[in-house]
Amino acid sequence: MNLYIIALLETLIQENLSIFSLLNFVKSAVYLCDIQKLSIKLQSLADFYYDFLVKIDFLPKNSFQEFRFGEFDLNNRNIDLTVQQVLGKINVIDAPLQEAIPIHTHYMDEENIHFAAGLVRFERRQFGYFMLVDLKIAKSAIQNVPHNSHYVIELIKSYDPNQKQSLRELVSSKGLNYNQFQKDCKLCFGDTFYSFSLKLRMMESVADIVFTTMTLKEIAFKNKFLDYGNMYKTFVRYGINPTQIPRLGNL
Image (cartoon, rainbow, N blue to C red):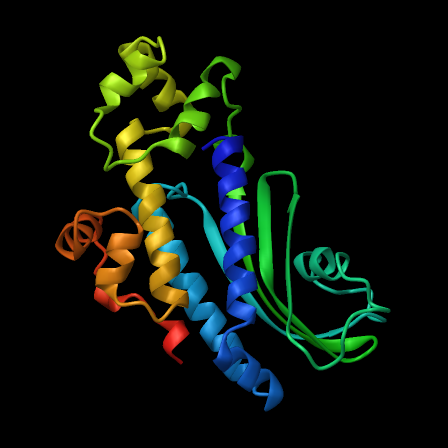
């Protein structure tokens, strides 16, 4: 795992949390003050994503995730460190009361980098509830991206798997050595170019499955799979059944 993957992970957390906070059932739970139900849904989603990202080797298998739910009082100096880090990102004076506020941050301790994300609800100016996922990744598992391999990041952003030009032809057209290109992909992605590109499309597909009401066939087409059968087989190859992915957009 390297800093490029870390940046992708942080973007994934930020974007998905923002979408989650706007879902109809979240708004309903907040309105009815059903915080317990909301925390269960958030934990279930976090557990699914953690399992998914480990299965596609996007997260190290020795990473660890904890879910925290409870009350906080800003006058209490014995608040858990992760909760402290999250609340420290909020402007308490301007924070809306009795609304679910999406929040995420990252921090490091002696051994791990922590990605903390979730929802915070202020009942009063100094008091409220938190529901947070704390993802821990060992700092020893994180490496720098070799500077001379950065070009593969730009290439994967523009790559279209359905283009007629083969990957080898695309690489050659840019004056690059194909064998060196594949070595640089391994250094940058920890994977082959094609395999990592496929995993990125799987991540986009999962977000569509979880957060939208599109059919699985529509999602397969949107994310440039040949058809739904091709998308289904791809997911099953990694031990994931797309029909069993939670569909929160339908709630």
